[in-house]
Structures are given as C-alpha cells and as structure tokens.
Image 1 (tube, rainbow, N blue to C red):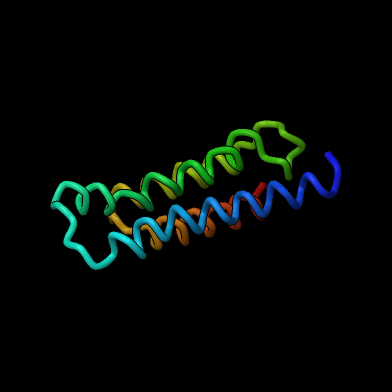
Image 2: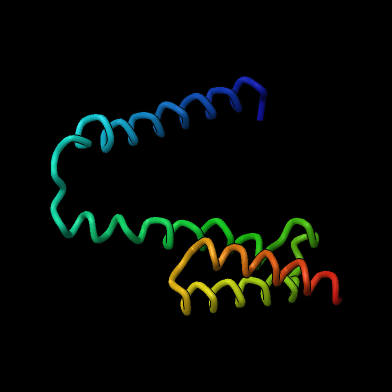
Amino acid sequence: MSETAVWVVIVLLGAGTFALRFLFLGLVGNRAMPPWVLRHLRYTGVAVLPGLVAPLVVWPAAAGGVFDPVRLAAAAVALGIGAWRRDVIQAVVAGALAMLVLDWLI
C-alpha cells in the first residue's frame, strides 16, 4: 500500500469518526434519549474492551502469534474480577497484575 493510500484511509477514517460522534453529540446531544438507549449505552465499554483485548490474548504479536498461556490466564483473572466486582478498572488492574506476576514466575 502506498503512502498516499495510507493517508487517504487515515483521513477518511477520521472524517467518519467525526461524523459519527457529531451525530450523537452534536445533533442528538441536547435531546433526552429513551431509557432503552441509555440502558444499552451503559454496556458500551464492556462490549468494546473484549474486542480490543481478544486478539492480544488469542494471537499475541509479542509471542509471534503463538498461543500464550500467561496471557490467557491474565485474561481469565481479569474476567473473573470484572464479573465479581462489576468494575472495569479493577478488572484491568487485576489482569495487568496477573500478567506481570505470571510472566515473572514463568
């Protein structure tokens, strides 16, 4: 892919991201949203975070794309703490600590 094509993709993605955010924050931001929309928006972080973390757990580039049991165990700890405490920050911190400790032990 040429350098120009990369910049075109970056600019188009930036414009699309701005348009999508402006739709919700600029046009709809001052209006009251129905309760079912607000209920679904509460789960956005919980839905996005696994999508970001899953490729790092299943196909980690740091391990050459090979399955890494330390990362899977750290993800399991984060999932368990998140389900138990219902707090994303505590789950992320617990997963990071588990990965540091398990990486140090193994």
